[in-house]
Image 1 (cartoon, rainbow over the protein chains, first blue to last red):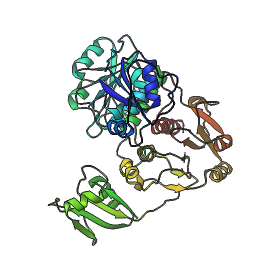
Image 2 (image 1 turned 45 degrees about the horizontal axis):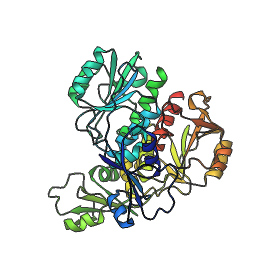
Image 3 (image 1 turned 120 degrees about the horizontal axis):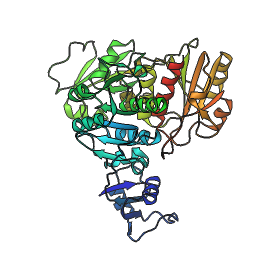
Length: 223
Length: 223
């Protein structure tokens, strides 16, 4: 189970088909929104509520949910593979962008930050409920995807080509890696294409969630 | 003056033409890298060093710099205007992306988080030293830019068109706004184009630094 905080996320949770185990309300909240319903509603003293929340200024509403994994549909066109993303804000933002961009699913390799970490959940802004996410051994998953006709585009700064030059195929799986070290070598070697976002200025690299956004929208638009 | 922490940033600071007022080293650092030089080097007890740093696991090296504003060159092609960006991580990431994308400068409207905030500086990953950034009244600046031949593309979800449909012009200034409320209405009304990044899934919007990345690389590539 995991905790999520704030009106927007709790409302998304109640609209979703995820199991909401209990709602937790701070005594400060005098009037509950009408969409608050269910049997397991607990009211807490405000200092207790603040204690269980991770944000500095909690909104006074939280929910405990059962974790859930939705397996991506593999007949789909666009998948995102993530290798050891460490920063919760980055993972959450990437999930939000993948949802916005209409990607069909996300596959998290081992070493990736826990998707049910509260900062990940907050950064998804509710997209955790909208897109299929699964955990897998990326090396094996890549072989399966390639058999299934996917072209896998890994990202790297060296020995790579401008992403705009890569010939689109019917099914594309993007692979992005760790904030510091990128995609690990063993996975790079198994990829079909190595893509680079060109750097025109003096920055050494892009933030991984920005890079993911640029590449996902590119893939969406060439399809 | 402002403080920055960590090896990468301090090395970038010393390579730059910014005035480094003093270097601060924790007593834990036994061997200094060879690029550490200058007269004002202070060594601190490690608990004092940790006290002045904002990160949880400081690297033991910090610098105090004089703030500096570099005025963008207006003969240039691509500028970025920011209206009331609040999150330090977002502002820093946007500065990093603008540098990577070879934009000519960034103009910060009032109500934007302090660019010398330590989290902004860390998120720039050193790009603060590479790109011209100035503060200005956006409303007046937009008039100046329009007289100078810039087409100003503001972003909004409503009453907007897909950014890929907007006809490129010689000089483009992108305008992005606050995380919650977007670009303020008065500025939207003065813009030449209102651009939208299409949402294909169920997310309500994109993170502003991801949106900035997608739009800046688009503008760079149509030029």
